[in-house]
Length: 160
Image (cartoon, rainbow, N blue to C red; front, side, top):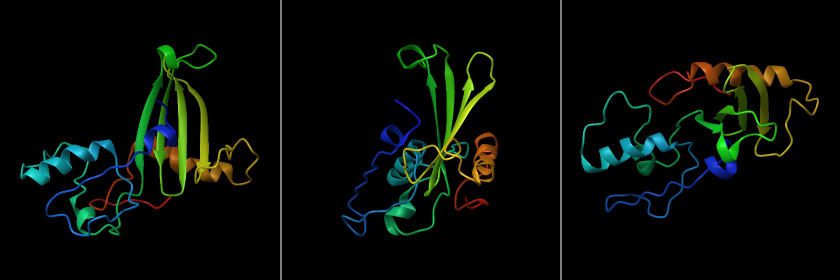
């Protein structure tokens, strides 16, 4: 369990008798929080307004539909997952179509510990590799980790 592609990028497969475009695929960003509203809509239940997720039914109808600009995850390195230095860290991650940004906070002191920026799954960390515009690239992601203002097609979203 991590904040990285190997654990956070999983297929979401939905099939219904009414599904158009059988065997179609969408590259849209979706999250686990989208599963419940999707199931609610499929069975005709009202979707509670306080949910963070969105029904993905519109993507079943149009897989190319513009969708979320980013998705979020977090992971606490605790217990068997504790960091090599023995410190527990909470990792907050934001992923866009192009990049993944991860920020680590010391769980006990709540102090910033580290940040990472990956471009299209490359292994190297851009800001540590002397990437010339590293800070300019990192700031929008860091701001969104805290504000979570990048949302969906139903509310304004900034491109990253």
